[in-house]
View (cartoon, rainbow, N blue to C red):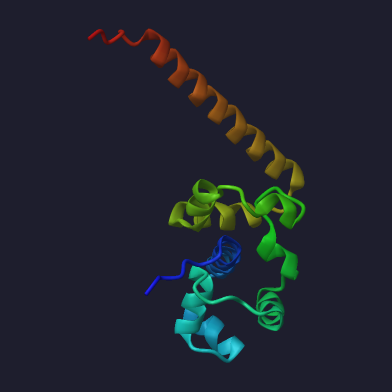
Length: 146
């Protein structure tokens, strides 16, 4: 018997459901209760093992107060065309981590758009500095000769 692998789109949509659930601090059990399904079914949705029907996706959207398109979008994208087929593992893994969730929750509580923009600029500058330092260390590393 050949084991079926989940469709990458179903896995992506499921990961976005999990991401949103964690962002709002909701358990699988609580989401399942709101949807009228078992928590095991929510687990299967989040893993992409079971596909989410259009009506169920609308119900999930209503619970989380986001449009259905949210579940097809990649972080900075404007629609599903840029999300599907891209490797979003690193970003999704971080955003779903405790650090990522804590950072997102804290960031969302900042009401001043100027302060949020400054934080993004700071993070961008720090990441560039870190990349530059790593490149300099690599250039100054002794060569290995065999």
